[in-house]
Image 1: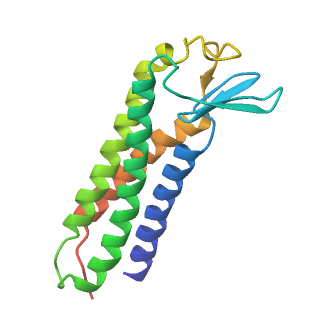
Image 2: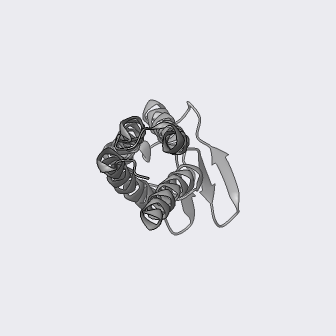
Image 3: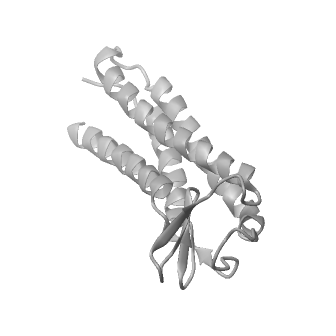
Length: 167
């Protein structure tokens, strides 16, 4: 039982780490001489970064991605704290339903963020504000990590739903 508990804790911390990395790191869309994420666009030749502001086309979509990723990370961290609290407060044989619900909310938020970015990426990168031209890029590892975090939070939510507290 202790090994299972350790695995669940490590799995949850891994999910949170993936969410933090994908939210913060600058690699959602990359090219030969640039990288961009939901916060800024950086040119690798000159090592300059420019914040993505409301002057960019489809800024509302970027804001939706930002908000969803932040909410997903917060929900994942809250779910971990609730799980730790429920370890001490639940009676024997009860399920970790509250933790599961919060983790499913995290899963939903990261899915929304990655889906919006997937759907709107062509419009997002056609803005004249981008220097250099970024439409010829490809998805970066932060975007891939967001989808992996979706799978991890989904699996984690299912694990919490099935898990019962034992001695």
